[in-house]
Image (tube, rainbow, N blue to C red; front, side):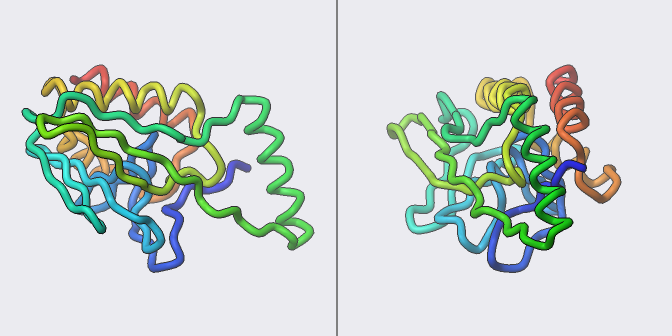
Length: 180
């Protein structure tokens, strides 16, 4: 069984869905997981890109020239299967302790220069390479104005609660890209 992706934090978790590099709760689309241990939070809205934390910033999409997430943990298919088997075995022996979430960097290029924000991965272990690539393609569409983060919120409000497996997350990302 694949570990359930949840936002990693030591504080209370927000219910929502992790799809690709996005965590979507009832009110926000986050890049990475919303969490009490994150240095910053990157929020995507229909009209702007907002960073909270020690250096809060906000840009309308028209001022954002590029948006990328670096350092996303990626695991090969074989590695995912080995990780799942190890997690199941460790859980059965009651010795499994989850690792700290991976830190990712959101790189924003806007009219006022280049800005970086650290966020935590929402993946329980790692993303598939395809999930990361599809997420970057969707981010590029937000920057170009051909898609909107509002579509992710609309989907989340209609989606069934619970964690999605990697193939299902990839299918959701593909659907958003097809709609844009």
